[in-house]
Image (cartoon, rainbow, N blue to C red; front, side):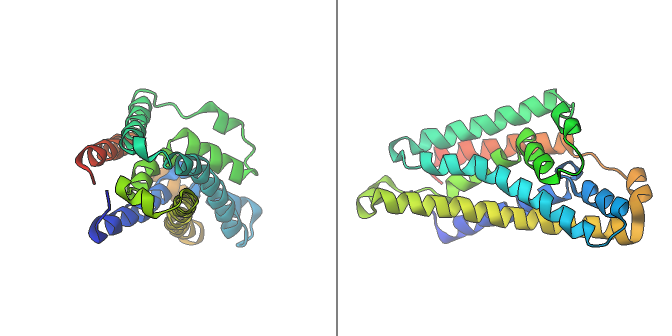
Length: 223
């Protein structure tokens, strides 16, 4: 299965837009960056905090995507792998719909350890899983092409795709969250944030389910 240019472009846009979506979501940590800047009373604390949050998020994406990049070598089971990944994402979304409580482990992480907090938050909320169906779609290859490419070349390409997806997604997330954090920090303040707090937990869970359905459908339909 070889993707046409339009489908491939759409998948890369999905990587970017999901990053923006994650960045807007307060659950991914940008309010913590605002708090860090205000508590330290130094403007440089804001970008530093955003950088640490981005690092944690990036590591979480890689922790999920890199194992899948190795499994994509099992081309004979490519469709089963994509379907299984889609079902896993759906299951995560259903779980988050049923269990609305935020993971207690996040509250135990020291506020100064933003990278660790970001990593755990992304893992707990299934942020990396959301990218898996999109990533597997980008890596889709026709079984007839295997004879034209060495296994090492295919693996290298899949790992490069995983790195590209993780970095581009994290950059989009950091940009979106950074814009919100900057506006709140310099102009609106935490008081405004406390009055206008928005919760995307339900939307997040539903989006996971929709992405999982997309992954299963695209595997079945050969896209």
